[in-house]
Image 1 (cartoon, rainbow, N blue to C red):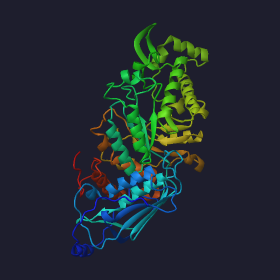
Image 2 (cartoon, rainbow, N blue to C red):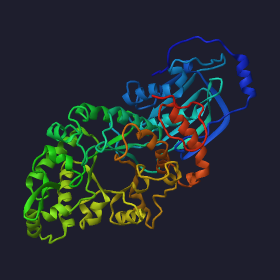
Image 3 (spheres, rainbow, N blue to C red):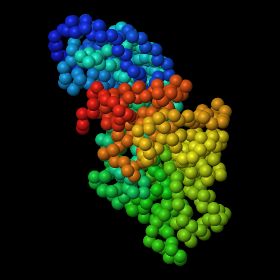
Length: 534
């Protein structure tokens, strides 16, 4: 048996206060966010005493004490469930309190593995007198169940904790529920990334899409090509992610059931790469002479693909996830058009003057590199749009505005998987208080077969970094990202009403504040526990 509790202190009994409590009527939490697939709760409630509260493993559980993911989660959730107790404040203890045990059972011992695209996150949770039973196929499902249980616990005005009798059966609607952070346009300190991972777990997000490099800077410190960050980062010492930093992020994410998806976007968005890797970018010409500027990655040189193969071999050894994002968006062809060597290559290959064919040629080579590394590639929709041969593609991320569901339909008709990002660009200007615009999104509202709709594997909130750094990242993300989280996790029919969702999201936003997440307000109002500062 694994037991997590805290220090032993003695407090006086307050039976009289307990009697008064009963006279005040019963309280129930507004609800869990995101809403479980099936939840039944009752006014019957049970007091929780931090000194008599335990997490244990079920006798039939495949995972037992020593399971790193769950052992750590028990400690983490004890502090989240009893914030006053763990921060050293006093609380009222009633002599009638009996021990309460949360018994966790999982079907598979995947304690030492990483979550992947096939990981089950389903769980059942039954809360009754003196105990809660949490059952899941995997430790990742158990983590989601622990988060749900933590949100069921509430604290009365006198300081006592309660949980109501509850039955839950839950699983995610979509398997891929991501958040993209851009660490190239502004460097985000590791601590800001870790705080975001914590907040992601609270909303049951399960993929951290790390857009780690781009035109402005190359903060990833490569073992194989150290000059990439030494010359391409904003600062070679302070504004980089060392191998240790990356490992810390991956480990922190794993403990919360979150995959880390790296993106190394090319052939465009690579200006910072060229500072540390000569001959990688295409020399631009002005007339018959080089202009001294550089464009996208040079797609005609064998050395380009040798470099990329070596870099992606390193990336696949550092990042354990089976997915790698290859980018491929917004390639400006003007530099390629100006370069006589590129034009000659185009003629030789029979591409004529169609530079989309040249980009397709480049991307196909890069996709083949990742296939050889046993990785599944994700590309932005641009690659699909100009790629005549879709057979080499696997997953397409739809990001452009307009009729994005038209694009989703085109991609699934081609038999490819889709990640939807278009409606969830949270860095875009607009009324930041309008969380409902991210909630009233219907990812499958297009004409297609059931098989085609199954190819929509999920969606992603994107936080691009032109105007975002560690000072405003958290309030700009939360709680608006949580609106997208519920759309991606919960049953659409149960969560289509904005007015019904609002009080639950308000409650959840207050919960985020109490957990130290600087989530911005939704409207006029207050939280019992306001944000206390850093």
